[in-house]
Length: 158
Image (cartoon, rainbow, N blue to C red; front, side, top):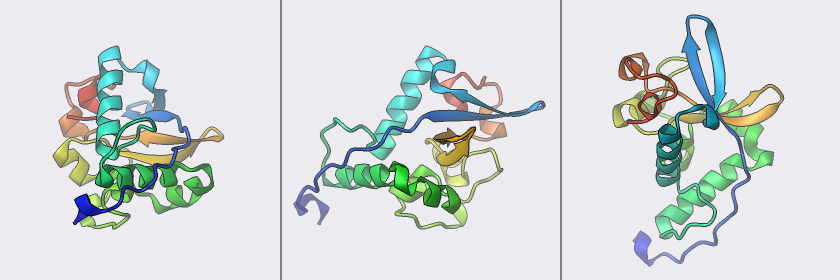
């Protein structure tokens, strides 16, 4: 039973910038968190930290501590290349323990995984962009995102 497990020590996650991948008629562009609306910045940050226990200074239960440590290991500078090559989103690595299945496959090259779209939760993958590692967020799909501007939280999470 997980609640009786000894609390693992909390690892510190290396900082990694977030980029938000936007597909438009003009092609692909990447935007920073600060380019989103203030409301969206708050909502996507809170959602990401909640789903993946990604805050270094939070109090976690045993399950959350495991998720946090898995996330910290994933974004460790020395592991970024391997995780980029895997092509998995954060949730597949952290929550599903790296088990790729048909439901965790990316729907479109620049859209969230099918399961993330159905759940409306964050979908981000490690990428190497303009000489630096980043977590690239993907939209909730062309259907779910229609009517939302990329600067809005609803474009990235529901």
